[in-house]
Length: 207
Image (cartoon, rainbow, N blue to C red; front, side, top):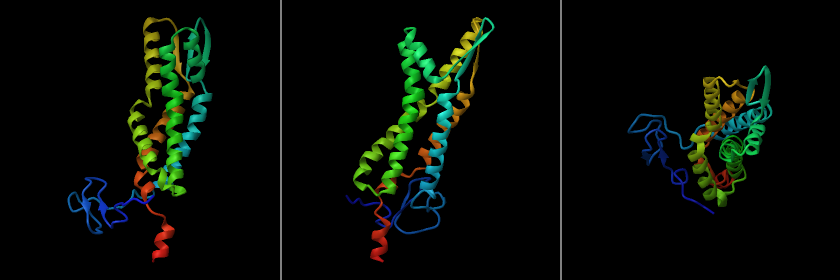
């Protein structure tokens, strides 16, 4: 399926003020920003950040998210152990929130970014409309990515305040924050318009 794009029509859209230019210029007529038809090095940067996010997500699920010290003994738990603990004690709501925010959403966002990159790599223009919908979805849920860290921080403050025990964040917290940050940057660096661009081979043949 073929789509008309700013690139195919020879137009330039300013990334800062979104002013559409009918000619190739070095700077935007309205705001003076540098003009690029596509985000520079979008694919390479997106691949780099999404791979970094994937690597950080591994220790985020293996290392303990929090360490509880009570009666002189330490009890460390990973994200999934925390989810299982809350479900076992009947706290289904909190367990579901942690599972969705810490496991389902990060994996879903990474899977979507990989899917978008593969659409561009294999020039699957027929999947571009589905890809743009998924791109908007991960942007929408991106602001909830740190929900699990907020839950842990709230639990730490509540327990410390009540003097019931001592809770400290584990190594998974840093790894999880890093994975979330890199995923957010990866989605920001990805230019969804690349999914609609025609193949470079066809352009070379036309020349």
